[in-house]
Length: 304
Image 1 (cartoon, rainbow, N blue to C red):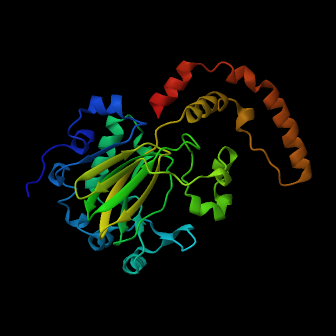
Image 2: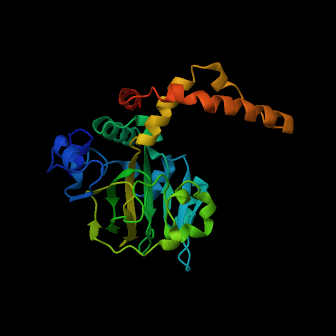
Image 3: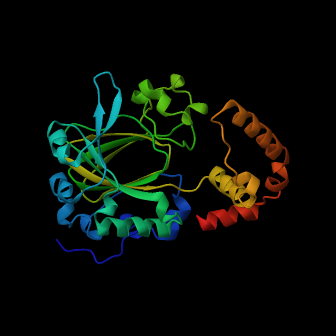
């Protein structure tokens, strides 16, 4: 099979679109699937380390976790040792290898190319690998970032659905994980899983080596592998308006020593002093924060 000489990036993932067309028509909130020859993927399907999960585990020294689903439907993600990963996989349990770009320069080149083309800070991107034994997968869930999925080995079915319950979530979530809702304090402030209704798939996508899928953040999806499957997920955390505002506020207030002062609370007396200090700061902070303009937010966006 010939090896592609094209450069990593959006055009290699979706060759029927130009980069500008992808940006204008799909980024960051409209899903896109494409099935094409694997050799276009700039070495991803030619890499010896990515031939199968065993080959990848030989070079991966980063985090690994199981992607387990109980009979009750509860979903568990449990950190495990890379040394034990292949055993867990042989027990018909999907596993996820995090930050694989730190082990393989090829994946790091892809990560950086996507970040550059889509104006996302490199530090806000990552690449993970997912290995699913035949017949296994992950139940309905949504992610807090935009993702590009590249199928390397095997065949996997994806079902996706629009998320009408919560827009732009700040945490990943799957209904089966509600047993541990304490792990989702921020998400729980604006999303109530008790009102959850099982998503109805709006599209079913069959992924094979060379298939690529882009999903916006928050979109429901679930998977099942038809045979042993290995895929990559490039995650991009596009800046939220909230993050830009908080960064702009910090940029202004950090100039003042009284905002940088530690606020001790180890004793009742310290807490009383801290309360008085905070009352004074809060009563006057609007003077600085009120001077923040759209240009300050754009500056933070460009800094990101």
